[in-house]
Length: 279
Image 1 (cartoon, one colour):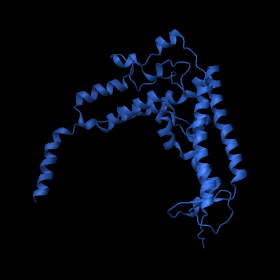
Image 2 (spheres, one colour):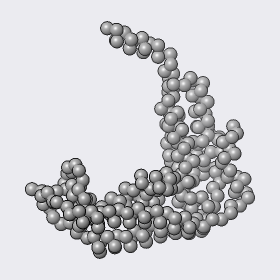
Image 3 (cartoon, one colour):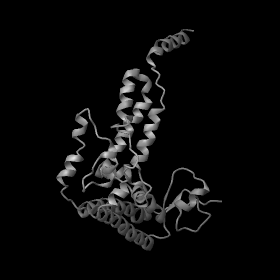
Image 4 (spheres, rainbow, N blue to C red):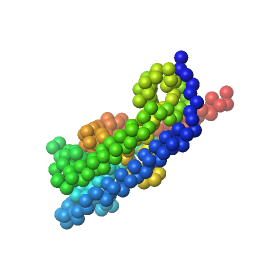
């Protein structure tokens, strides 16, 4: 049977709170260090002329994502910003397709899925891969290596510090019951099967802070700069956001939509609803 423990307030004051504060400060410091280590190079004039995105939105002729030429000092999180916005707009169109006339839907569908310059169209052989584009340029590869070092080195030192000074502490308790499957995640470093699963060890608290502080960093650094370590590891391993595949999937989703305007049926639906209320 699981035993209930009484946690000493000194553990809160000298283990839980310092560990949380240190993790937040390390995350903020690592962000500014990586920002200082980032190399800023003036892009070529030809790149600026061909890759200007802001001017393309003010004209009817727009540039699809697959034909954009990105500047040399582009950051990896901002590389995904434009396709994500396009995908979000396309999803909103699919969700609200029944609330606009057929002519308006066809014009928007052409705007997104046109084979010549549609925003969602990715020609074969021209699909961009963020990792491939970065490593094709030595400067971008060097920036990526600096970011990886700014993530790996602090994590290694912090884990060694936590493992040396705070190993074996029961730091906190979760205020709701959990199943036995969570024991390995929440009680790392504690080999006692009699302790209730809701108790969290100091080492597990370190990992929870490592992967769960994105919301706090978004308040401190801003939403665009609050990329957590989970996203960084996915980008390092090549499992991050794939713009070309996501754009193609969204284009296929819009192509198969059968438009049906919901407005002509509104009166009938309102009449049926009023009849039900009057009965």
